[in-house]
Amino acid sequence: MRWYIIRAGLLLFLLAASGNRVFADWFPESEQEKPEEQDAASKRQARYERRADNYMQFWNNMIPRYTKLQFAGGMGLVSAGIGWDYGRKKQWETDLFLGLLPKFSGDKASLTFTAKQNYIPWKCSLGGRWELEPLTTGLYINKLTSRNFWGREPEKYGSSYYRFSTNTRFSMFVGQRLTFKLNEGFPRRSITVFYEFSTCDLYLINCFSNHSVAIDDILVLSLGAKFQFL
Image (cartoon, rainbow, N blue to C red; front, top):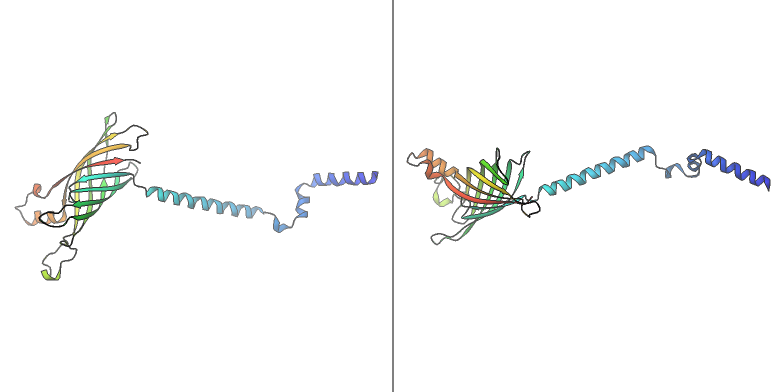
């Protein structure tokens, strides 16, 4: 009996001294996770997390940051749209508008689609919650949905009778904005009112080719409001 106790004590001592090396002899090598396998697994996990972050960031950037309402401006009588601001100082904006052109002289009402790019060089604080954007400028393209207007002239007009599309206009504008910042926690962070003077490619061609057309004849005034919520 004493001999068995001595052998059991010796076995326990060897197990404690050898530590994990004894267990390594008990399990096959294939069942152990090698250091290089751990490193590969960590890299796969890091790549997955980066892809997930990029995916979430992409869809977060696709969420509109504000809504706009605009009256006139060659985009219909009234237009409503969504937009995104970006850049280091949020000096760039991209807008998408859907406008309504009511029927005139018996014509049917039409819809307009507008893609607009804005640039705001700087902003000036007026104290408190007020902020002025003394200069805004940009370009936009407008598409009118109506059978009375076309992108390519009908055959009945002959070759090059109209040398331009009647349902698509390219425009440029300059304007100013006044912003009021709302309290924290309010659904919209700020409300902005603005005005713009714009002109389109067709008006510019007429102005340069016909000296009787003055600058104020080709300028269009528009008014609008922007509701920032992100």
